Amino acid sequence: MKKSKTTKIMKTKLLILSFAFCAVANAQAPSYLWAKSAGGTSYDYGNSCSTDANGNIIATGFFYSPTITFGTTTLTNADNTGNTADMFIVKLNGVSGIEESAFGGENVSVYPNPSTGMFSIVAPSLKGEKSSIEIYNVLGEKVFQSIINNQSSIINLENQPNGIYFLSIKTEQGIVNKKIIIQ
Figure 1: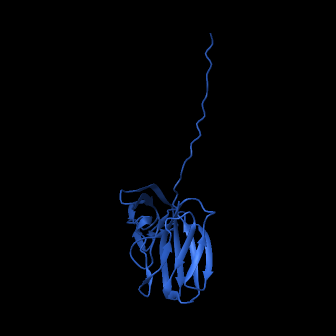
Figure 2 (figure 1 turned 120 degrees about the vertical axis):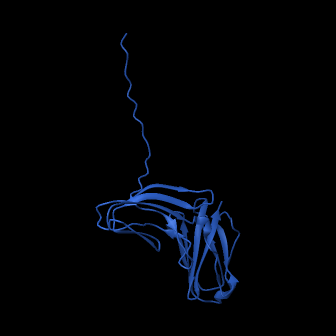
């Protein structure tokens, strides 16, 4: 009896991190809120990316560039010629570390949070000041943008999938960042 040979083809999804690194950065404090990419001028590679028990992002890799930048931190290659790779291990604060700021000492309220997608935003200190609202998903993609001219507004995100989002309110007084959750 002749044995038949079966060839199995395995399809695998593979994530290649060839240096496009996502993190989150706060311009007003040394903690990170969001950075879509990091890198240098030559071949820079991320080998691994993970989170620890506290939600911090840990990434490893190597870089040939004379320098590589993560947010406001710059690492220098010991060779500095681009001929030799240096290794990096970085630890960045995770997305739960967003500082919830306030204008003029009065908190900006976003409620209910979590919600099914309808959010009320109340900022008493705006007093009719023209402000912009932007909302980003965890990939850093802008999913909502609007201009408001009053102290309260209702935002409808019911068309967005469940998850964590980042609300940014920009005014002449400053920027407020809030984490919002759709469930």
